[in-house]
Length: 336
Image (tube, rainbow, N blue to C red; front, side, top):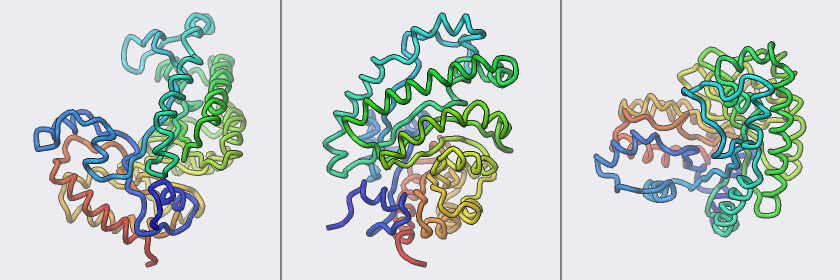
């Protein structure tokens, strides 16, 4: 009997050769404009994520998520704007944060996924808001950067509360199912490197990772960080926090998964396929898969688009990508 979808995913995360092929996943849904274009080019209309994954014959990977920000929480006036500016503001909005009702809703979703997951027919990743990401959502993009220096007490208070919420989330899920990976949403790099210093990471993020990550790893679950941009300088920081891997490994930011594998041989990776090649035809996509193939064969790497497929990619080109993906997923499961 061949490996299940879930078994194949775990084999790769544990540096074992999977049977037949590597996992073939889209870790995030496609952009709405991409789907709209494809519907105009023949994709059946109105497919949900599960239906789209079936249509494209991809391994189903779904996300479980309990938001620490309830639906009743005030929204920022503009994208990236502030919800709070002070401790007093935090007190005002705190009744709209860290809701057990949101955890309960996630548990109901997990129960609906459980039977299929138990049969090995799907991969489940748990999303947790990270200790850079969530304060930024509350404070706004620019004020958050100043808050490391101007409001350290508030930064720590938010992350203490977020830690407690994350631990409650893990405790609640523990009685239902075991996700295949946990990813902390962070987005703390840009195209040239991290947005914060190692000192700021160690002071404001590391103490909270060290409370949550061991709880996850004690259950035998691999822990990732989701950060766009150039993440390579940050990998030693993440390793010190007990993080096992990172995604989505954006090529446009200069991320080189071959260099990561050389410098960090046991570090896990998800993503890495340069989405900008997908509108340029089969030769460009094949060259990109050839670039990735040695790392695919090394283990510990789940290939996928390095972010959501952009609307410049036609349905025909996406189908070409999938055909090549299948070919190289089989090559990646074999020795060189």
